[in-house]
Length: 273
Figure 1 (tube, rainbow, N blue to C red):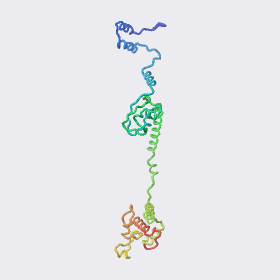
Figure 2 (cartoon, rainbow, N blue to C red; figure 1 turned 120 degrees about the vertical axis):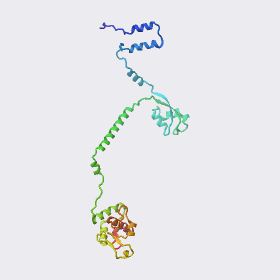
Figure 3 (tube, one colour; figure 1 turned 90 degrees about the vertical axis):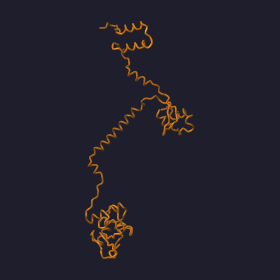
């Protein structure tokens, strides 16, 4: 047990005195106190900073400015470079320091130009933690949004998509489907105008054919709901419909396309056309 008011001598003291008496000098002599200080038996005084603390203190007290040799690359400007290196005084200071190299126009700097930049000391910028936290928040928000989008049921996505129209396989369905196609193609016509002309021409029979009029005598009989001859069907066929004059929708849209070209609309047709 120690005596009160006394300090135990380090065990390596005799060795240190012996070496000193032997006349050791130079690097060996300087190394010995360090060896003693770091030996297992050494007692560090309370409050002595650790190596990590000393290093941190060194970084904090590093000089704020320094000279950097910078080579201009494509897309650079004095403003960008000054911002990158936090030049005190901004691009104007950077220009004054390098006016001889840059020339009369500070907005014209060529790639490869060597500049001397009075930059702040390298290290983490004070705004970096805030920027990092902002980036982290943005990443979290983006990830949350992506996760929410991925978690949406497929049924909800399908429900949002427009449903394909369905049509009855009868005269009413054929006319309605034809009207939708005509609207998409910019062909005029109304339900009443189409229905009225169909009932007069074929009574609603898509397979109707006229084998006794002048067209039939010429070898091109009228066919289908609106009694269209083959040359007219070929000339006015609407893309996206079957190339068949007996197809109800193809026949109606071709006839309405012809009537729009000849009479302005199928609604203006009240007899043979």
